[in-house]
Length: 216
Image (cartoon, rainbow, N blue to C red):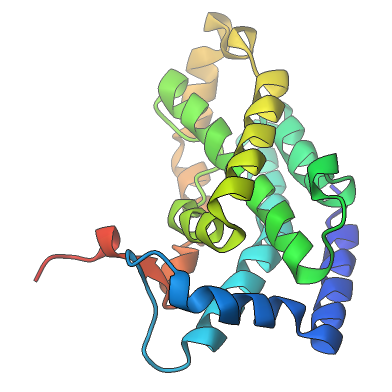
């Protein structure tokens, strides 16, 4: 994993944002049009949303590093490594659909691709093994990111993810001979404990969806 290169890329994008304010202006325009299900604190909603986007991007190299470490501890490197490499590839060699995007705006798209890839692979693992491969709790964060990116373009990014998953995994990836071994490793107490350091990103930052709220 070359997450050092990803971190350097993120640093350059942050410097670009500091110089241009491009993403901040974009978020200011979107604030009045956010879906009513997305709730923000009344104090400094623009700042909260900016911090959310920054953290959503920053989390990708952290997630990849943690996933690689957990995979080594759990003995499932062979299963996780291809997923991590594609997620990394979304940053280092983004698909043509992202041509012309730059700065944090571009990295939001690339982070969305990486997080959605993990979610789609997790869904397949849950279907076959009853356990996610990388149990990071980013689903709500990605729903919010989808809204910030814009419905039409985010849907195109989703298609790119589906294409990547189709190339990465097929029914042979879940051959019966390996099912029990995978299930035991994925559900082991050590693996579960290693992932408990990944709380809900959106909840941590004060951004969420109405469907998450507990009825009074």
